[in-house]
Image (cartoon, rainbow, N blue to C red; front, side, top):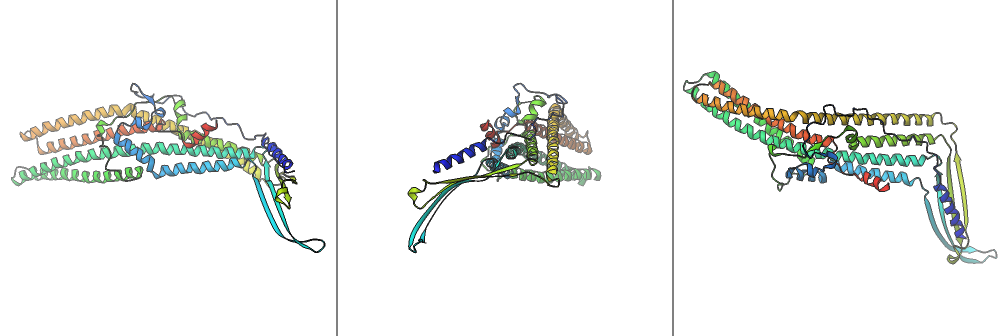
Length: 476
C-alpha cells in the first residue's frame, strides 16, 4: 500500500531531523575590548536631563523643523541607503537558501500513458498506465554539522549586513545635518561678506575722493583698493562654496529641495538634545559598526566548523516511494519503495582540506582583528567628539567676545577717523580685524554645532532596529 511507503518515507525524514549532533565550530566568545574603561578626558559637560544617544530618536535630537524635514526626505530617497537596505534583502534570501539546504527536498511526480499494446495472442488493445511517486534526492546526513554551520555563517552575514544598513542610516542622518549646517553658515558668511564689501566700497570711494583732492596719498588709495578687492574675492569664494555645499546637500537628500520647506533657523538659534556620554563598555556595543564586526567574527567561526567537517565522512541518502496501475481507481492500492545511501570519506586530497581549515582559522583571526579595530575606532571617535564638547563651548564664548570687542574697536576707530584723529590705515586695519573676528566666530559656531551632530552619531544615535535585528528577535 502507498500508506506503507509514505510511512517509510516519513520515518526516514524523521531520522534525518535527528542528525547534526556533532558541532565542530568553536564556541563564540566576544573578544576583550582593547580600550580603556573610561573616556580619556571624561564625559565632558553634560546638561541636566541628558539622555543616551541610542535612546534619543533623531526627531527628538534635532530641534530645527527644516532639518527634520530634510532628514525625512533623505531617508526615503537617498540611493546609498536604498542600496544598503537592498543588500539586506539579498543577504536575507541567501540565508534562507542556506537554511533550506539543511532539509530534504521532496519531489512528487504523477505520469500517465495511454496507447495500443499487442497481446500474446496477437490482438491489439488500448492500455492505460498511471504512475505516482515521492522522492528525496541525495539528502546529506549532517552528522558533523557542516550544513548547520554553513547556515549559521550565512545568517551571521545577514545580521552583519543589517548592521551595515544601520550604520549607513546613522551616517546619512549625520551627513544631512552637517551639510545643512554648512549651508546655513555659508548664508551667514555671505551676508557678512556682502556687508563688509559694501563698507569697503564706501571707504574706497571716500579715499578716491580725498586722493583726487590731494587730501590722501597714493598709498592710502592702494591700501583701500586692496582691501576692497580682497573682500570681493572672498565673496566669490563663498558663493562657490555655498553652491557646492548645496549640491552636496541635494545629493544626500536624493531630490531637489522643495520650496515648501519650513524656513531655516539661524546658526545662533540652533539647539539640539542633551547627550549623556555613558561608559565605553555600554556605548561601544550599541554601535552598529561594532556589532557588524562581531557578526562577521561569528560567521568566520562557523566557517571553521564547515572546514573541519570536510575531514569526516559525508553520507547522502536517497529515498523514494511510488505506485503504478493500469487504472486510476487502483493507483494507490499497490506500491513500492526504496532507500539507498552513499558514504564518502576523504582519502587523498593533497592538502585541500587542511589548507581550507588553515584559511578558515586565519580568517577568524582577521575577523578578531577587525572587531578590535572597530572598537578602537569607535573609542577614538567618541573621545574626539567629547574633546570637542569639552573645549568648543569655551572657544565659542571667547570668539564671540573677541568679535564684540573688535566691533566696538571699529566703532571707536571710525569715530576717530571722522574727527581726524585716526588714519585711513587705522580704519582699514580695524575693518579687517572686525571682519576676521566675525568670520572666526561663525566658523567656530559651525564647528560647535557639527561636533554635537558628530557626538550624536558616534554615540549610536539615530538608529532603529534593522530588518536583520527584527528577524533575530522573532527567532529568539
